[in-house]
Each structure stands twice: as structure tokens, then as C-alpha cells.
Length: 417
Image 1 (spheres, rainbow, N blue to C red):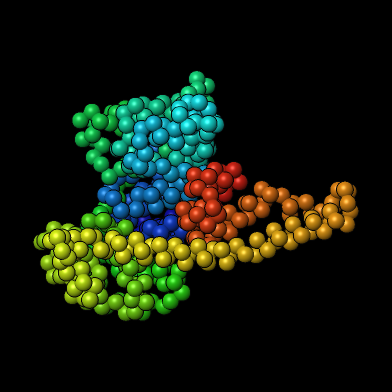
Image 2 (image 1 turned 180 degrees about the horizontal axis):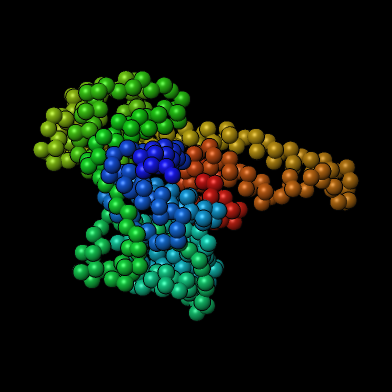
């Protein structure tokens, strides 16, 4: 019988391999004990059917954990559907969740499936669930308890089998006390609670995150990353990061892109960090004066100051647009072979029709000409080109993100991306 120490030694490499899988496949990066605790619980709960409530501040990576839970579950062969409850008004939220029938409300010109139905046999991720209206909460609770729901405007009872993962940055226990969140739904969602620590509580993860985001950005741009100074890393580790990992990612992507992958110095870090946190946290981070800063500090007529605008946000928006345009250009280039294949198919059909008149064209391989097969291949190519980013893939394909979700469920591609 193996000793406890030997058994522990055998377990550690396996756990490390699982953590590396989470980083490689789902982008969950870090080695701090607080994050590892959350990752261990993720690995424990993923193969089960338990409902999971992911809590944490905005930008801590709740959706990444939801994707990992689905991807490591038996439901990974079916769709993972995500919905932000805070982004939609009450009526539209119910329509998105449960679907509607024609005539249910003004503008409902046809029947439409809801996300519960689209996610059947798969996973539904409800982000910002604390912002869900009370009336919608009651209907969601019914689905969780019975698996039944009715589309808006219909009395038909439909049945679904969906695993629910919810996330919130709110204190749901306080919301229950205030009466803004149903206690029974809270208990149902809180079967397993997975809390993600804020970035300021795990500064030891920042070097790994910087390296990860810098490498991804350089790969997209086709440039080399020359590294970062220890003093620059120390500055990043001292920053409070109110926007957590999302804020760090934006800073690293902006810095690496605008500096062309050059070696990151402390002066660069000071220039790109914006003092949005409290003054005591922002000490020592005064941006180095630049030509842009001088121009923005000029006061035009009327006494208004252009510096009052969030220039960092504007630069990041422009940078994101530039990156997305570059990605779209690369995707179109990647899709060109498929487009050429379609042209060849059309030419073959035209030549066959001309040669045989009204006779039926005999295809060499009928599967090659099926529109649904061609559509499936185009969707796979677009998702591979964008590294699984469904928003960019949908934009490149000229369809809405919701339509892409339906197509993924239709072709059984949810577990691949």
C-alpha cells in the first residue's frame, strides 16, 4: 500500500496538468492559492449536474469559469448559451429566455425559440442574475424545479433539460433581505457557490497574466514581445485594478500594440495606467507628460477642458476597432478557399446544365453540394480563425451572435468552441 506522501506526490502532477488545461483551453491564468481554490472547486463540480453560482467583482473572469464548467461536463456535446440579464429590459429578457409565439407582442411576426430551448441538453449561463426582475425570477425558478415553461403568448407547456450556471457581482443575500431577489431562487442557485477573488488580492498572478495577454496580442499582430522590466511588473502589482483582469488585459493589449511589442519599462507603465482609483492607491503613478497630454490640457473657449474626457477609453475603443478589423481581414483571407470552392461548385453545376440541357446533373459527391454542410464548414473556419470568439466569428459571417448560437446547436458544434 502506498504511503500518504507518495499518494500526494502522485496527485500533485495530475492537479498541475488540470490547471494547465484550464489555462490552455479556457484562459484561466494564475497560480495564487485563492485562484487555485476556485479552480479545484471548478474541477470538482464540472462533471456533476449541480447548479453553480459564480460570484465576484466585475472583470474577475466569471464567464471563463462558466465556459470551463460546461466544457468539462457531460453536456459539452451540446450548446452553452450565455445571456446578460442586466443588458435587457424585462419584456425582452423574458422573450430571450422563454421565446415567444407570433402575435405575443407588437413586432412578434413569427415564432421564436428562447435560450432555454436552444440550450436544451446543454448549459445556460445567466450573467448578472442579480439584476433579473422578480417576475422573471419566478419563471426561471419554475424551469429549474420542473423543467417546464411556456413561451410568451402561448399556453403550451414545453419541457427542457438544462443545467444552469449563474453569475453576479451583487450581494444576493442582501438583495433577498431587501426583497429584490427571491429567497427560493437564491437557495436553488446557491447549490454550489464558486467565488472568484479580485485581482488586487492575488498580485502574484499579475506576471503570468501580463505574459499571457502580451503573447496573445503579439500573436494577433504578428510581432515579437521583448519582455517587461521587473520594476514595471512591480508597479502593475501595486495597482489596485478596480476593473480586475479585464482592466489589466486592456492595459496590456494597449501598451503592447502601441509600443510595437517593445520591452516594457516603468515609464511606459506609468504612461498607460490611468489614475481612476482612489488618490491613496494612485500615488506614484502620475502619467509622464506627452504631446497628447499637453494637447488635451489646452482649454478651449468656453472654459471647458478636453482633458475631462476619458481619453484612455477612446484610445482603447479605437484600438479594439483596429484589432477587430485586422482579425476580420485575416478571417476573410482564411475563408477565401471555401469561397473559391463554392464558385467551383456553381461553375460545375452551370457547365453540367449547359451540357445536359434539362437532364438532371449527376454529382460526383452529393455531400459536397449540401448547403448545410458548406455552412457548417464556414462556421468552423470562422470560429477557428477567431480562436472561438463567437462575436467576431458572427460578424465575419454576416449573421447575429444569437443566430450563430442557434447554428452551433443545430450542427452540434457547441462542445468544439
